[in-house]
Amino acid sequence: MTTVLLVEDDPAISEPLARAFGREGYQVRAHGTGTGALAEVQDADIIVLDLGLPDMDGLDVARQVRAQGLATPILMLTARSEETDLVVGLDAGADDYVTKPFRLAELLARVRAQVRRASGEVAEDSLSVGGVRVDVAGRRAFVGSRELQLTIREFELLRVLVRGASLGGGAVAADDILKEVWGEDPTGTRQTLEMHVTWLRRKLGDDVDAPALLVADGEGYRLTAA
Ligand code: CA
Image 1: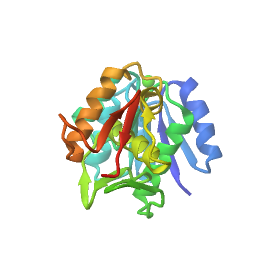
Image 2 (image 1 turned 135 degrees about the vertical axis):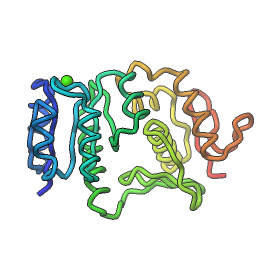
Image 3 (image 1 turned 90 degrees about the vertical axis):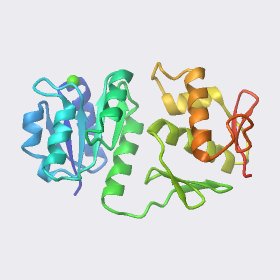
Image 4 (image 1 turned 180 degrees about the vertical axis):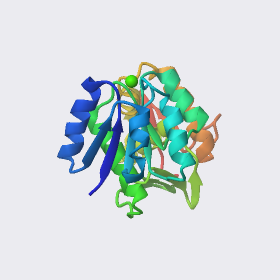
């Protein structure tokens, strides 16, 4: 049985989450403090960790888990986008993050993906268009045999575009991309999207000035099979 160690001091978040994990068939150990959680990390298959805990910083919990030599997947819950930058920037050992308020379905999908990856299961859901392939469950992306080093947003953006392209080659509207990739996050604006498109083009090896692979199309973007 998969054990989720849930570390969150706000019962309005932890209680519904614990119930949802239970419904998914996970065994749940819930803690409101970092100290309490650290006593149980050895038994966890995945750690869902709030950044702002009353007794210590969630990043310190993550560091201590890694300092014990544990590779247990850690999914951070962050309250603001500035915190997200911190989590990603500091590289304290978190594998993924979700910004509050999050959609329950999204968080559960992220947890499933991390559990699957940690257990070494072969990812079945893979999408591709042209030479671009996205391994959705494993959260990896490739151009030919070259693996791309993408941030979580870049990965999500690419996933949405590859899915759009493989479902008939149409463009994906910018508003739909923003809804799916940024959700309720207020940093999800057209400008942010344009920046991410530029970064993604660079990583794909597309020409940023005259893109041929990730092209603007009407009110959105399209990934070509070129
Ligand atoms: Ca908190």
